[in-house]
Amino acid sequence: MTAELNAEILHQAGIGSFFRPSQLEPLGIPYHRLRQLEANQTVERIGWGLYRLAAAEPTERYSVASVCARVPNSIVCLLSALRVFGIGTQLPYQVWIAIPHKAKPPALTNVSLRLLRFSGAAWTYGVEETKFESVPARITSPARTVVDCFRFERLIGREAALEALREALQDKKVTIAALARTLEVLPSRRLKSILQTGIL
Image 1 (cartoon, rainbow, N blue to C red):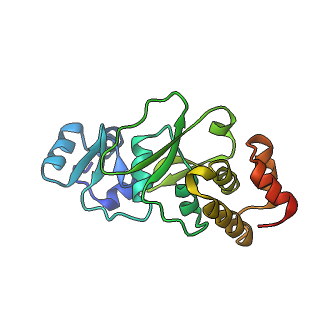
Image 2 (cartoon, helix red, strand yellow; image 1 turned 90 degrees about the horizontal axis):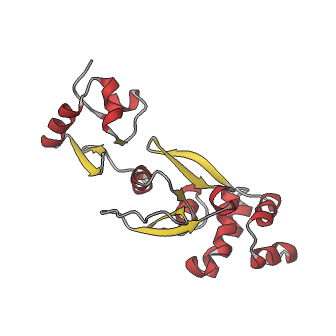
């Protein structure tokens, strides 16, 4: 077994840019060797029990992956979800995530968070499993994301919500039926009115 570590080895093992010590044990890299790799700056610790390759090139999803790795019980939502799905023109400098209503807010450094709290149906409905840089994550579906833009219009602005709706429909990333189903669970009077009148 190898005691070295590089991006190819991680990729072959199904590990992304971020990893935990337990993921390296099957590769023959015990914890003391990980500390040596940290000391010689091959890897860097970015959070409690969370590491990354120092030479790894950040991708467009790096910030989202970093947050999901450090806040595993979270949901990528609103402007960050729009960005992931390529809906609209919003370029958020913050990573937008939701956590359970009573959860302790994460204390992260080197990344700016916009934090929401979901509970009940909002925590489960229209939430998809995904991965960013091989980091397991959850994200609101395109239809759920568009509905949320209207539910949280005060946070993102009316124009951003309308733009998300227009582009998602034009690019066939959502359907009227999917939006209507989501509205039955997570109502928005404003979006319901728009869909009923057909006036965007």
